[in-house]
Image: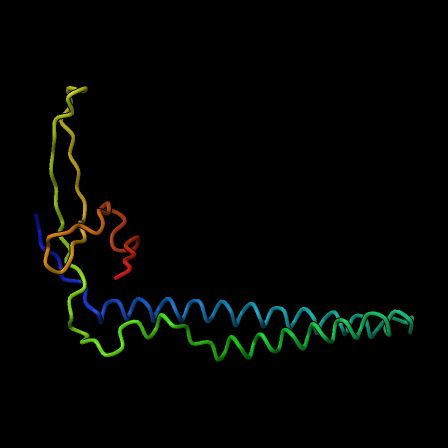
Length: 146
C-alpha cells in the first residue's frame, strides 16, 4: 500500500478551472458556428434573383443571426456557480486522501488466485472510502462532490 499525495482545495479549483475553460470554449465555438451559418445563409439568399424569396427568407434568417450573436455574448460572459464552490477555503485544505493498494484473494469457486490493484479515494480522516478506481484510469475518472 502506498500513500499518494492528498487531494486539496487547490487541486479541485484547478480541475474546476480546466472544466470551465473547456465548457466556455465549446459554448463560444458553437455560437460562432451558428453565426457563420446564418451569415452564409443570408448571403446565399441575397444572391438569388427572385425578390420574393429574398423578402420571405431573409428576415427569418436575420432574426436567427441576432439570436446567435446574443448567444455568443452570453457565452463570453458565462460564469458558472461551481467556480465559487471553494470561496473562503484554504487552498491547502485536504478534501481527500489517495491510497494505492494491491491485494490478492482466493476465489472460492475458482482455483485461481486473483489480484487487484487500485487507487482508493478516502475521506480526509481516512475513515470512509469515497471511490475505488482502477490504477490504469487514475486520475482521469475520479469525480468527487465534496
